[in-house]
Length: 120
Image 1 (cartoon, rainbow, N blue to C red):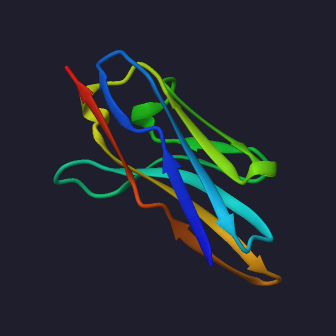
Image 2 (image 1 turned 120 degrees about the vertical axis):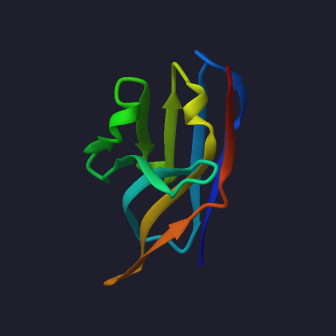
């Protein structure tokens, strides 16, 4: 079994910054894609940023230039540095990872979510 453990959420004023972390634990052979989704009040879950094992990244248009995703493959950890935060960034942020647990067998896992609240 694999577990994703997130940390780093909280309350911050507009213009401030936060750094989210997510580490994967368990029976892991390799991790392909890692990313962050978010779900605001009354909204659907949306992809914020993603990163492949090779370091290729992609971002939602709304966060480009403000958020940076990175990962430490040795630690099975992904980070999301969030700068210049806006009230509309307020959401529950979920970590996700596609984990290979044995040869030819993999699936997507989700973290429990961490609340990010940006006050105006």
